[in-house]
Image (cartoon, rainbow, N blue to C red; front, side, top):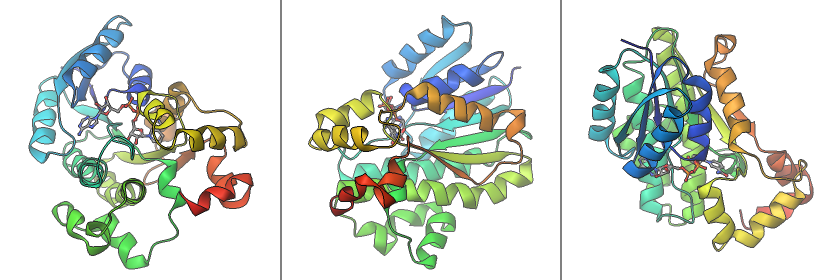
Amino acid sequence: MKEVIVLIGTGGIGLAIARRVGAGKHVVLADLKIENAQAAAKTLDDAGVETSAVAADLASRESILALIDHARGFGEIRGVVCAAGVSPSQAPVSTILKVDLYGTSVLLEEFGKVIAEGGSGIVISSQSGHRLPALPEEQNAALATAPTEELLALPFIASISDTLKAYQYAKRCNVLRVMGEATKWGRRGATVNSISPGIVITPLANDELRGPRGEGYRKMIAGMPAGRAGTPDEIGDLAEFLMSSRGRWITGADFLIDGGCTASYHYGELQYLKATH
Ligand SMILES: NC(=O)c1ccc[n+]([C@@H]2O[C@H](COP(=O)([O-])OP(=O)(O)OC[C@H]3O[C@@H](n4cnc5c(N)ncnc54)[C@H](O)[C@@H]3O)[C@@H](O)[C@H]2O)c1
């Protein structure tokens, strides 16, 4: 039996993380599109990492439970990375909420029951969640701790009609949910954190760049303090640290890694975005 790392969402960011934490382990690559998981498996196989590829739907509890069963067939689960998601240009409100908000919460709940002692989890959230104003305390508490099956029926979630808002609330929920779950994961000796990337060039980001908000994206990239978009490898480096032995005192935390975009959105030249984002 080996130590197992599970990655759901085998896109650019997920693969960059798996490549850094997979050496000597069995890496389960799961994606809604099995061909994406298989392509990632081939890349890692060719780099000397043992893998298996499976189809899994983050939005389905049944599918998450089947993924856990599959993973445990190889050994104890030492790490889980949730890098599956849909962006505002890719899907309607209901799908964004079901995948990004509800699905991520199911994953945290179910993996939190089986994660190995000394294990760690990473959820890829987004800078988008940092653009919402502070929510009322009772909404924070509900997003962090309400039973997962009740999340989508919360009135302030059920009434969302705009895809950008849906994405922002889902990503804010990811961060709060990680805080709530960290208190439970800690009882198993495991850590769990979220990473909120800015614009990182992957197929998902390229969809945004080519989508209806593409021009705005390019302007935003030029205006941010770093003056460029990020790369999946830069997110991978941060995740590797959080999942390493050096990250053991870090749990229930969110890491904004965005080239300064959020700083500029609130206090710099990107403040013009507040009218629309
Ligand atoms: N790329 C960016 O600029 C950026 C910025 C902030 C946050 N993010 C977040 O990073 C995460 C990963 O995105 P990426 O940039 O690597 O994109 P990507 O498109 O390369 O990868 C996303 C993967 O998730 C899979 N997926 C979609 N729905 C799924 C579902 N229901 N179940 C399982 N898999 C599913 C897709 O098939 C795809 O392989 C997402 O949560 C996204 O919101 C990305």
